[in-house]
Length: 195
Image 1: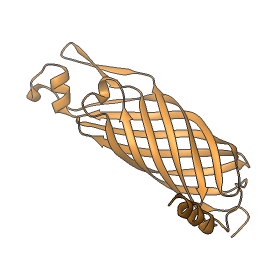
Image 2 (image 1 turned 180 degrees about the vertical axis):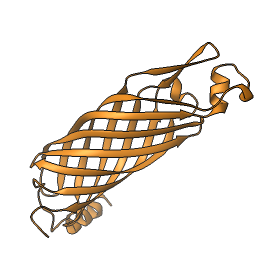
Image 3 (image 1 turned 135 degrees about the vertical axis):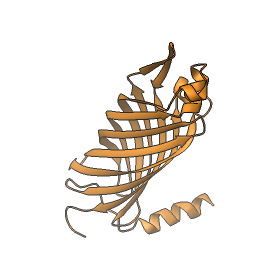
Image 4 (image 1 turned 60 degrees about the vertical axis):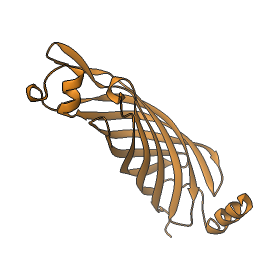
């Protein structure tokens, strides 16, 4: 079975090319988003989805704008807007490995039901709480060329958030903490050197 998968990948990648300066990528993202700490208590994992834009500013360096959102079963809605770079460390015309880093703008909307349970308050005396903040992120990933205009890959991203809190009825609630994304990425490539 493994040989069949390898042969399939080679067949669809026969017309692939290297990463070229000036290429633009439009991406769709889907995968697991994990909230850590108190914010994630009771519902850490959820399916996250979103999109991205990348511009290759050098043959081994891409600038990215990524957005993802997720709704967690513990009454938390999470969103992440990330600005960063990918540095391609190796690979060939079919596969490219990269490390990434940058700045994230995170937001967590905590529903009134969770706010009431965290602050030992009645549901009627509280409302939704939104915490926003910044994070530094580090990550890694791999891209596979799937023909001349498509890439498929996996991206791992750890957000180290600058924690934020909100005081509700004398109880301090953490509204912003670290998060982890493990995302599948499908990219449409607009090559700088034409088709």
